[in-house]
Image (cartoon, rainbow, N blue to C red; front, side, top):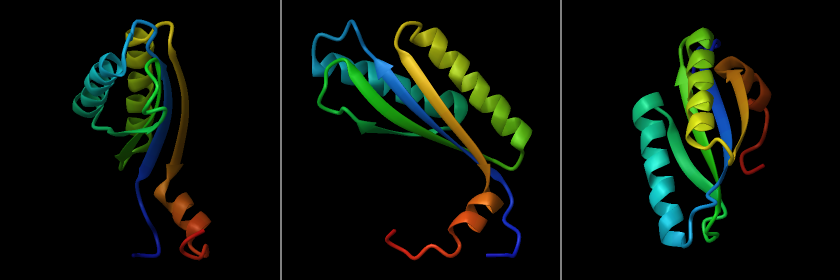
Length: 114
């Protein structure tokens, strides 16, 4: 890797509530649709990370990358607005945006496995 790492990454932790889901199958259907739309509309990589076995709750993590901080911020803002519209009573979002260089500087001297 070069001495200067460019680009920006965004991580969005999304906690969802599915009050209408009466079964795990119903939740998974709605969640699969949400994950697919996050990917197709915003280019996000998305994974469910918690509460896989609960009917009405889920935590997913979405990751985005861009060469431009402005473009990444606009995309993250649009993604959050979309989630708020889709889940008006059941979404909590935390976002983190960092330059790749910040991450390289932070983790360069961290031993693997920590």
